[in-house]
Image (cartoon, rainbow, N blue to C red):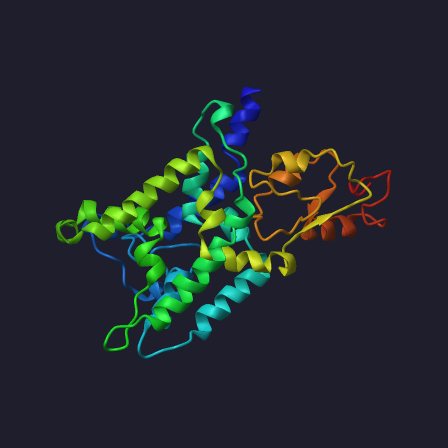
Length: 308
């Protein structure tokens, strides 16, 4: 049992999350000097939330980049950012949320803090309706306000980054305030507000799985819309399914994979696939591998997709 728990704690997904967070925020000189990296890599969008203001950030956040273009007085549309989001969404959907988002990693680690089972919240009232809030935030704070609420010279603000994003506070705001004296002097009520939001989501993440991803994140909202049509998606083999409910119980997001295997809420963590005792839930890429191995396509009652 102890060995199984150890393997569970250091899962491949967790290792990928940690490695990606370290690589995408690996500009050590930025932390040492309290300066933001502004080299050529900063013009390249990364798939997950990656705050521009983080001293270690080597790439750009797609949500921050989109707001910068929409808020600019010189540009009104970014073919690069929109194309990037469409390409990533079409390729893998919210797999990015499950594997390549540093703030997703933070929430996962916080949720691993041991508490009595009764203190862990699996569902909250109205969570499905609250989930639509991230689409409202995407429309209002990421698109409309940066475009329309402009100053006298026609320049807008990155509203989501400036007033909401707790990822930016954690990876950008706090390190800069700690390292740079000038940033400490400039920090005021706005920083206090962002810090309160960060504390709220951090504490909430301990008892409830990924609240920011579920209810707030506009990037997850964009990728989630692509889940049903992305190149990488899940498939139910109904001839194997016994409706045991193992996949539903394994999903920390409260999804029933048998009914909606490609739900916009799904972050592609793969827990449902690992939990299924009958291998009835697989990715479409796994199905292709099985088809190559077995003439029957892995669907006969005898081989169950093992290729024998």
